[in-house]
Amino acid sequence: MYILVTRTGNQGVLAAPLNSAGQPIRPALTLSYDEFTEYVRTTELESTQTDAPRWVWDDTSRWYPALLASGIRVQRCHDLRLSHAILRSSELTASSGLAGAVPGRWDAAPPFEPQQQAPGMTLFDLDGDFTAGEHGDDDPGRSDHPVDDDTLTELLRQLDAVSFCANPGRLRLLLAAESAGALIAAEMQFAGLPWSTDIHDRLLTAELGPRVAHGRRPERLESLAGNIRTALDDASVNPDSNQDLLKALRRAGLSVTSTRAWELMELEHPVIAPLLEYKKLARLLSANGWYWMDTWIVDGRFHPEYVPGGVVTGRWATRGGGALQLPKQVRGAVIADDGWKLVVADAAQLEPRILAALSTDTEMAAAGRGTDLYAGIVASGVVETRAHAKIAMLGAMYGATTGESGRLLPRLARAYPRALGLTEEAARAGERGDIVTTRLGRSSPRPGESWQAVQAQAYDPAASAVDERRARSQARDWGRFTRNFVVQGSAAEWALCWMAEIRKTLRALSEPNTGRDTAASVFADTPHLVFFLHDEVIVHSPADLADRVSAIVTDAAATAGRLLFGDFPVDFPLTVAVVDSYAEAT
DNA sequence: TGTGAACGCGCG
DNA sequence: AAAGCGCGCGTTCACA
Image (cartoon, rainbow, N blue to C red):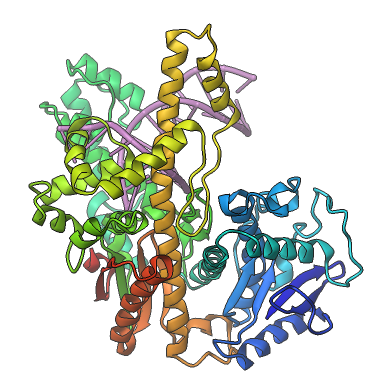
């Protein structure tokens, strides 16, 4: 059952129960916001995992935070905006009405809104003009149904597009996983990652010296800057300015083309050591220093905003706080609450395994059975070392042509022709300007107009050698993108299924909270996801449940593999650690 | 005074 | 040893 919810003009919500075809099965309810909140609460409490309704709404990030703040979790939803984005460009639905429709409200970026959620915040603090829409309604077929026309129409279009596509099962799974991801993203932002400001502060002080006002250099950086100036015999060089620094390095007789750390590392000069140290610490200060801590850590939790579907491949993005770049340096500050544990799990060599399964390369899949996949490649005699296996695999998935990676590729191609054939084919498609599609049906965008123009120009009889070189190089660039898109995007789908399965099973582990208490209690006694990083999750769990959580996370990986690849024999092993501190896990 | 490109580096 | 994919973000600097 679907329950489609829309905002009415006058501070209310219309909730329309629909069957799986999108037809009304009961009259729609007109509810005040408070009534709606109670309606969702009771509906969720009265339903089981198998008969829970799927809430259909325009945008999870606009509806769910307020429900969470009221102490309510929902089990399933259908996020129309995210689903639309997938269906709009999927190869599988290319002939649907949805794909052919004039771009409108559902193609617009979500309205930006700062997402600070104070306890007690309601749906209506988040109220915006998304529903009102500025693009107008381009659909001629208006109905007299009391439900918001545009939203219902969009649901029907989406259901239609899926039903009549070549592989409805995969797209249904993708839309369900994407929508579950949206719920998880909102829940993770709400719960936050447990963060000890005390430990973080001690760590910063140990590295940088005592805290100083924002904008000033801490003691340790100041003294390193002094050493740099002395070594370069330049009293005014500013190590924060790359231009300035590059000139000073050249004046000192060093032949460098940039100030990148890896280039500096190859040089022998008294300035190198203090400079590399300075760069490392300056980065720590600016990216995750005290100012960052004050900005992003609230009540002992890091609350980044996750953006499902924020990357073209289907990976998540984040906004604010740099959540997907948490340096290993500061992970010691991620600490479980008293009596709780962190269950940290990451999928081992996820992308190569995805590639093996996508291409039904049984040899490559076998290399990863019950072991480190790179070690398995070595054991098969394809290359000599694990490092080589890894470099070669990355080269295959990213499109390396030169260097060590390029040299190792032919050996990999001989051993795993199916896997390497798939990546090559994806690259060729991109070079032609064609689209490629992930396992579950997310397709790559087409290259832009300027790309097409450059290609067309190269075909002109009057084209110069420069034109042709430019066109070839640009085509190869796009080919590397599509080559990687298939693998990265399918891996993202695996990760969504993994998380959705974890979430579902964790929920069954403990009785749903009756949700009568304060907002903070939604996750009070329950293991819950608190962090996600492409192929890695953290569950914050009461200590006595941590071992069961580990098993759940492990089983969920296998389930995700089956959901995507059926019974193709590929393993998705995890590294799982039950720890007090994130730093212990890596 | 504001805006955006370029750079560099953190993560997968 | 430093290329080959996808990101976010802080800083400097040129230019409006």
